Image (tube, rainbow, N blue to C red):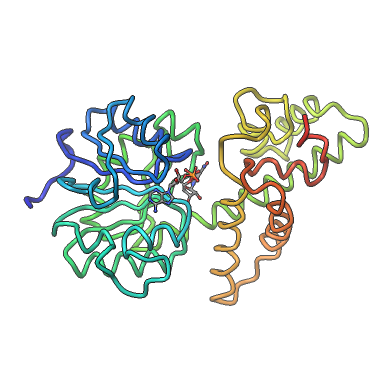
Length: 315
Ligand code: NAD
């Protein structure tokens, strides 16, 4: 295969994992004129992309036929290992893994949020086979995925980063090169540990005001113009009815599932433990989500509001 800079919209992209994030990301690539073949375990998700102009497939192996670039947007480490190495528990590449089938020179972009050590392990197998691979987890939520304004946090070699950049620009606004393979995942879990802390703290503060007789909307406006201002208050308020078009105002559906925030907090705690760093606030937020996902794993992560005021979960 000839080296392709990917500036060229004729680049053929395989996109695997069409959930809350991957679906709109793949749609943006189609809108920018790329040829996109999609695959997801969910037939309904594939059909949605077919309506937007994607070519559907029946397996990851079929999806990557003719692809010069592969993008994955999967839930967690085990799904990434299943797709690339052929088995969730694989310690080496098996014949079912995509890395056994990809042509030398293919560019692989994994945008899932996963364990940095898994990102390093999979990318080192890819590199040994002459396949360029970057970890490129995202920030910006489903709204950013739909608007094409995601932040990509990339780990990988300079040459692979340069190849990935034009494609990432079709789905995002800010593209950061955090360092070598795995560095994107480390930066991403630092961010999401802080997000878990901020969301829990914002829900706790709103609940304190509401239980003291304050109107949650008035309290939110006060805190937004005061020193408690933060992203969750500004664009993702966890209390129902304060902001339109956020998960809390549609029964906590869509968005970023609590089980994914729970996964990310545990990734952060493990990373801290591995090197002996203290994360007391991250540990508190993790304990809250450990409890919360027992009943609310598929609800958006802002449903942690229900941990403090369970009436919001039944509105
Ligand atoms: P999701 O659960 O909505 O989507 C994941 C998709 O992957 C599903 O459609 C599922 O069917 C598919 N899938 C699972 N295993 C597969 C396999 N073996 N082959 C093909 N498809 C498979 O998750 P999401 O919200 O889109 O998140 C994806 C990743 O992005 C996660 O790692 C998450 O932590 C991260 N993330 C999510 C958000 C958000 O706001 N939702 C924001 C930033 C990062």
